[in-house]
Structures are given as C-alpha cells and as structure tokens.
Length: 147
Image 1 (cartoon, rainbow, N blue to C red):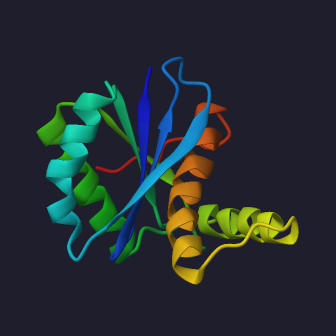
Image 2 (cartoon, helix red, strand yellow):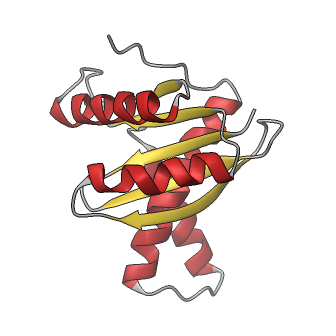
C-alpha cells in the first residue's frame, strides 16, 4: 500500500512516499506555502499520480503528550485532505522527527556533503516526513486518535 507522509508546517510541507509494498519510506519533496490550504490541489494531483492509498500526517504533539493548537490545526487540515482525496488518513506523533532529520543532515555534513542553509531546511522537512513514515511502517509509532 503506497503511503504519503506529510509534515505540515506554516511555511513548508515536507513529503515522503513509501514503496508500493509499504515497507520503505523515501523523502520526496518540500512544498513552500504561504497557506497550507493552497497546497491541497497540488497534493491531490500527487496522490493521483503516485497511486497513493493512505495518508500519514504528523502531529506536533506537546512534550507532555497533550494536543495543542498546532496539532489540532494539522489534524483539521489532514481531515480536509482526506475528504477531498477519498483516501484514509492516519495521524502520528512527529515530535522528534525534525530533530532526527537534523541529526541525519549533520552526519552528512560531517562526511563532506555541502548544503546551503536553504537546501538544508528543505531537506530537513522531507527527511522528517520520511522518518515518521518509516517508524509508522515499522510499527514503532502507533496512530494518534483524533476525534
């Protein structure tokens, strides 16, 4: 089952895609946005072109496991995308995914890769989406129930 992971941000949306077997997550791209609502038509096209069967949206939960305003906004946005695409949505805790992505980029820098600040930020969002998607596919993070 091909799955699209979405790391929703105010300025950028990081995307990652699984393989058709639903075993491997790969960073896909980053969409720059002024308003996440404006990205929905582009995402609907991507969902259709890539034969996506499921959406995984990261929720920025608070460190005490509570659901704050940013997580509520991400959940509402994910539900809208699900309704418009006709694809089921699963919400997961993405609190530490940006930190993990930053560590990966630091490792790449230590091994000689040169990244501009802008390119680093762009890759970080897609890597974060791939990180929580891979954890979800591996059964390491459970879905978060949003009513």
